[in-house]
Image 1: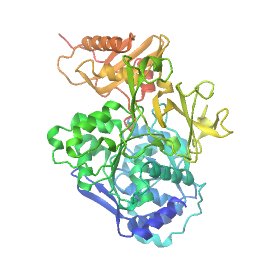
Image 2 (image 1 turned 60 degrees about the horizontal axis):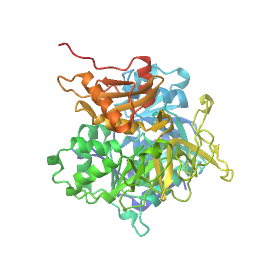
Image 3 (image 1 turned 135 degrees about the horizontal axis):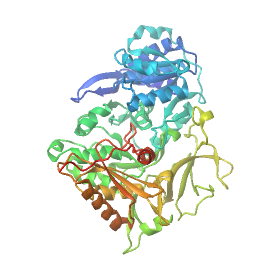
Image 4 (image 1 turned 180 degrees about the vertical axis):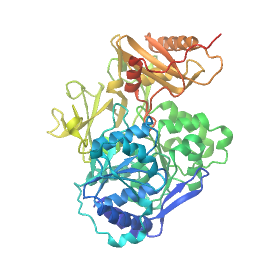
Length: 570
C-alpha cells in the first residue's frame, strides 16, 4: 500500500462524501473537497507535474491557508515527485518564512515551487535571492483544469519510495529535511490509530478532526491531512492566523462540527486559557471532543488541569486529554495513550531529579510534577541511555531517549553538510539495531514515557540540574508586568541568564521586575541568576510552530543584539 493507493481507495469507497472543509475567519466553509474531488484534482495536477519534472524531483509547496495545499500534496504523490511542505512565500527579506524557504531551497534544490496564482507573485524576491542552481520554477496548481486528469498515469512507487521531505521546526538550529518513505508514513499512521482508538470503535463513524495547525509542520500535516485520508473521516481546517487572532474560533469549530479529535501544542490550550473570557465560552458544547492531543516538551500539568476546569461547564472531559511525544524525525508520533484514562501526572522528588535520579516524591519532599506522554506501542522501541556513552541507564536514572522502528525516517536530505547525524546510532546490548537520538532527556515509568528537557537546554549550576521550563514558569509569575510564559532561561559562561518579555504596562520599572525575578528564582530553585534581561514584546525568537528557540536567544544575548527595555525618562 502507498499513499496514492490509499487516496484512490478512499475515493472509490466514499466517493462524494466530504473529506475536507476549510473555514474562513467567520467560521463559515470557504472551500470543500469530497473524496472523489480530491482524487480528481490529484490526478489532474499529477499529470501536469509529471510533464514538468522527473520522478523523484522535489517540489516545494508554498501555499496560503486553504485546500490548494492538500490537492497539490497528493498531486505530487500522484506524479511520483517528492512534496516539500513549506510556508507561503513573502516579499519581506528579513521575515522568518522568507529565511526558511531560502534554507529549504539551498538544502534540497527543488525543481518546482508550487502555490496559487495569487500567492506566487510574492515569491519574486525569494526567487531573485536564490542561486540559479537552486532556483525552482514556479507553477500555480489552481490554474490546472480538471480535464488534465485524463492524461494521468500511475507512478512507479513502492514502500521504499520517498513520500515527502518534512523540514524540522528549527528549534535547535537550521531546519533539516527529514526523508520519510511511504512505509515510514503508513507505519506511523497505523501507530497513531492504534494509540488513539479503542478496539471496538467504528473509526468510519467518527466525527471530523478540527485543526488550526500549519500543514507544513509535521503535527499539522499528519493530524489534519494524512490521518483523515488514512481512516476516512472528515477534516475541518482553519488557518493558524485565524486561531491566533481569536482562539475561541478553534473551540467554536469543535463545538459546531461536533469534532472528536483536535491536536495542538500546549501553546494552543494556554492561549485559550489566557484569551477566551468566560462569556465567550458560553454556548460551547465540547462534549464530542474525545481526543484532545497535546504535544510539548514538556507537557505542563497545570495546562491540563486549568483547561479541564475552565471548560468543564462546556462539556470538556479531563480524560479527553491525550499527552503524546513525537518529532519530525519519527514521522510524528512516538508515544501516546491509552484513550480515556485521565493523563498520568506524577510527583517526582525534585532534589533527586536535580541529580539525574528518578524517585517518586515522599511525604514532605519537594516534588516536580511531570506528565506521562503515553505508552510506546509494539513496533517502536525506546532506549534510555547516557548521553555521553550511550550505555543503557538503569530504570531510576535520567538519560537521553533513543527510538527505533519503522516510523523513523531515513535521515536528513543533505547529509554531506552534517557534522553529525542522530540517525543510525547503536546501543550496547540491543541486538545490533540502530536508533535515533531524540535529543530529549527522560525515562520510562509505569509503562509511560516521560520527557523532562532537551539535552542542549539542560542547565547545570553548582552541580545540580535545572530545567529551563521550571525557571521560566517561576519567572513568569514573579511580576505582573511579565507577559504570560514568555521567558527564556539559559546558561552562559558567567552563569544562568533569564530573559523576560514585558507587557505594555505604563510605568513599569525594569529594575523592579528584574529584582522580583531574582528573588523568585532564589526562593523557588536555590539559584542565583547572573543576569535578568527585561525585553520588549517580540524580542524572544520562536519557530513558526511557536516553539521557543533557546539556542538562538542565547546567541543573540552573547552577541549583544537582544533588545532590552531600558528605564524611561523621569
